Amino acid sequence: MPVLFAVLLFGCKKGYDKYWSKENPKTGFIYDKVKNDPNFTTFAAGLERADLVKYVNVSGLYTVFAPTNEAFEKYFQKMGYSSINDVPVNTLFFILSYHIANNMWYYYDFRTRFITSQKVTYITRNNKFLNIDVSATDVFKVNGISVISSLQDLDAENGVIHGIGEVLVPLPNAEQLLAAEFSNSTFYRMMQNLASKQYDRFNSYDSDRDGKIDSVFYTYYPLLPAINTSLEYVSNSAPESQGGDPVFTTFLIPDNDVMNTILAPVLPGFENDVKKLPRLYVQAFLESYFIKDSIVLSQDLIARPKVLMSVNGEIVPALSADKLVTKDKRASNGVVHVINTSFPPSDKLKSAIGGIMTNPEFTDFVEAIQSANLLAAYTATSKAATFFAPTNVAFANAGINVRKKTLNGVQLTDAQFINIVKHHVISSNNARSALTGSKTTDYANNSLAFTTANNIVSVKSSGGIVAEVGAEYRGAAGVTNGYVYRIETVLMPASY
Image (tube, rainbow, N blue to C red; front, side, top):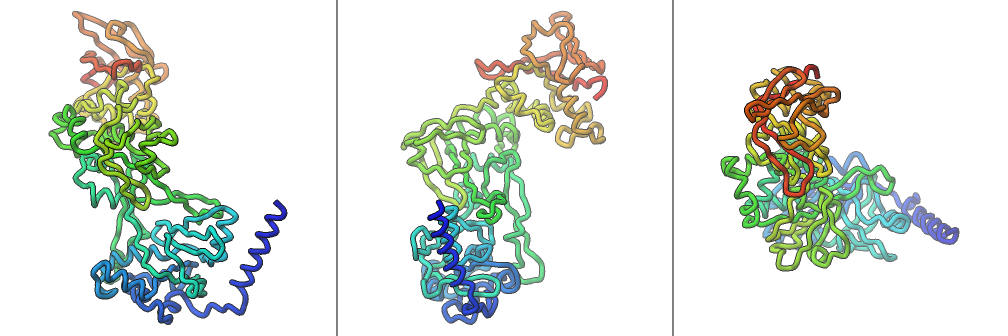
């Protein structure tokens, strides 16, 4: 260890002297440097056209991988453009932002960071990642493209410039890939039931130069927090991370024939419209088809060198080559495969509550459980429970909005709302014949009282509300967590 440290220290000292001596003056900001260098005039014009000059010419510290004029000529020829002015501004902004890495990294810095912490990925201005290869002495590549040795380590007041012989075109993120190539996929359309939008400050800019920022939004999925389709990094405060590390998701998408078979008994209850499927059913269904934190290519899906787990913690079933209809569609933050098979329903869907997720009369009750943060607990197959499920009409008649947690327009506290929900749950399995006497609910010290007359079972809440115990619903065969009974009235407790 002392010998290794001495070698690293000597290498760092030599690098420090080389790159930071007074004999190596910086003389100008990044934009000024590339504008005045005959190798980079097209790149400079692109920065101006894409409104990126302000990011690299006054403040901050950046590492810029600058394509030469010849590199742009090759790009124009490949894409059918005559000049930089033919490239759509949004495309240019998207591409050139990818050439600007955060912080100031000379070859010496990249090499030292690789030796000390094996660092190879570097975040760019648009929150994508570059792959820097300095694994061997005097090797310097970005995304497999060699940095031109004579145009390496060009100093600027606010950073450093490395010349490259090709334009770096980033892969689309997973959301862009799915929207572009899988927009007709029933699976992706189901995903949109859970989609939300967030302002993207990194990629919003004044594209039409009217003095106003043209807002860009990225898509995320609050009920699928383990997957990332638009975001490409997670925060990390470790010094070597630059503040963030790349994240990846593997998508296993059943094709439309498979999806149509699965949804055939479900869709009629929702006007045969995928967009109207309950979001919690969609969440429970989709979770089986994502593998988080990794890019799993087709050969590993088949060979299985290790166990693969979906985001809901269940083992991804084995796949053979003939089950992969489309494979290895790469995104910058993931990979997409289309399969012609389905996976077994998740434990969540096999539970008693899972059994009513596709019943259009109980969507509010399932939402109430979700709003009370009890869904994971109440759909666990180890949870023994008996649920008394008010219909949607019952919630409306009681004046309860389960999404907003309001009662007759008045906001309930989280505790109040949770208590109301728990008053509908008994933590034991009770067949209809066992619904007798008084039974304590999950709302501590509050009980439900049962009576039977003329073969009709009635239930009375601690608040004096009476409801007939209606139809019975069960989970999948072999699932032990219970019974769900339909009721037409919300069982309000005496206090909450």
